[in-house]
Image (cartoon, rainbow, N blue to C red):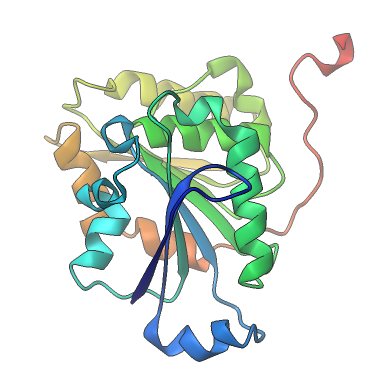
Length: 232
C-alpha cells in the first residue's frame, strides 16, 4: 500500500492520510476509471491534535503500516484537539467530498468506520448523512438512541468487546437494538472477553469488518427524514 500525508487541508482544516494499493498508483495519478471503494476511518480521542504519526497507533492505519494490503482507498483524517468527531460533520464532509472528486470514487462505494470516539463519530456521520454511505461499522461505540431511525437505509455493522469498561458494551448494544427496532439492517458482533483497546485491535485485525466494507455498495439513495421533522 502507498500512503501519503497531507497537513492542514484548506477546505476542512484537518490533517489526513490517504492509502491505496501499489497497483493503483498510475491509475490514480492519471485519474482513470476504477471501482475501488473509499473507506473512511475515524480514530479515537487519543489521536486528536497535530501529530499525524499518532494516527498509526490503532486499527486501519496501524494494519497498513504493518504491511496489510487491501483493494480499497483509505482516508484517515485527524480530528483537531479541541473537538470530537460529533462536532465535525460539515468539516468531515468537506474533506470527504474533496477526496471523492479527486480520486474519482463512485457514489455507491463510500463506507465509514471508526473506533471509540471514532465509533461514536461513525454513528453521528451516518445519521447526519443518512443516504450517503454504502455501510458503516462502528467499533466500541455508543450513540443517540432517539436518532436510530436515521440509519434504516444504511447497513450497520457493530463490533464491541463485552469487557469494555471505557465505552460500555451495553450502550453499544442498545444502539444496535434501536436500529433494528426502527426497521434498519444491522448486526452486532460481540467480542468475548475483550476490553476496549484489545477489542478494537481484534475487530480490525481478526474479523471480516474491512472486507465487508470493501464489498458494500449503496443501492437506496432515498432521503431519510430528520427525526421530528414534522415539527420544524
